[in-house]
Image 1 (cartoon, one colour):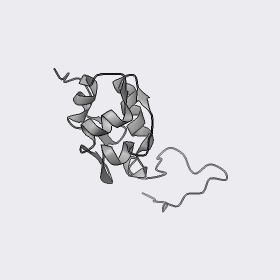
Image 2 (cartoon, helix red, strand yellow):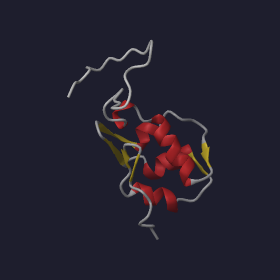
Image 3 (tube, helix red, strand yellow):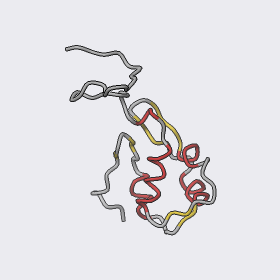
Image 4 (cartoon, helix red, strand yellow):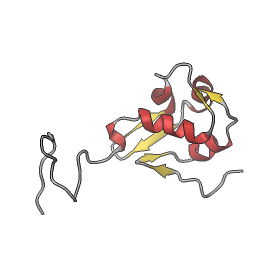
Length: 107
């Protein structure tokens, strides 16, 4: 039974139905088991998409004890496409010595 309170979008990653599937999966589970079960599932980011198999494929011999550990592994391995606009902050200017490659916008 899938819990409707499980977030489908977290930290810029759209899990869709994978969110509930990870919750229902039997743990502990190895990386290979997750890739076999969900490798074709595509995660969506603000700036692109990538399959679970591509994201977790570089891990070897990892074991996850819970759904939160499996989600954390996915968060750790996604690239900058999941964060939206890089270096964006409407609160502070660049720190002393910080190099930013984005254009500075003035409103």
